[in-house]
Length: 114
Length: 115
Image (cartoon, rainbow over all chains, first blue to last red; front, side, top):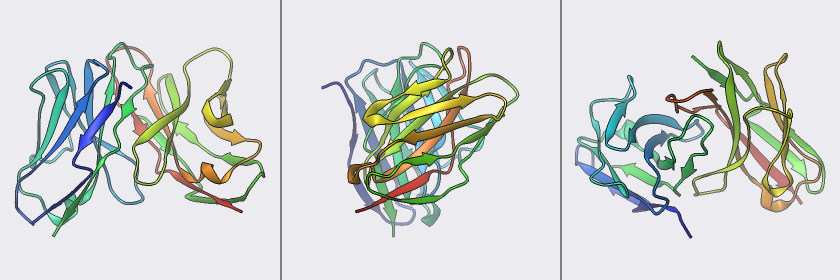
């Protein structure tokens, strides 16, 4: 089945220790998104790629970076995680043919910061 | 800018009873509307979406939603719920058109089914 895969599902890191979360997709979609979802809150868009074009949300902290080396993979790098960065991180994809497109979500990576 | 309000953070419902989860939105432009479901420890899955046309939209798992432009609402309903419907439900909007694909989510409604 075509899908969005996130690894690892659970990640524990120490305060200030860089961490990378991974997302891959077999849907061949043009757009890939990263959302942050804190406990009992709505998912919040951090950034997205339309193909290789990177779009950063204005309020995304500089501590968060992303890479998309090819169509299938996208990475979220947190350079110096703080306690406030503990959250579920969701990757999503869409075809990129307009706002009506469905976004397909992966299962998420739950990040714990000690 | 768009905003979404889900007034009910938690809704407990007895099994086989009907349920309505409320969603109101605010936008200065036309929008597309979505309902997503999130089961425990999983990502979001699309239940249904309204783009245009008939205001009653049918989705997966027996859910439906009605778009009401005058009341700026998009409430989700199911006539008879099951234990497996226990999940978090998110309403979301996106401005219509091409080039702006930012979903704005509500804060979610946790649906708990009571046996």
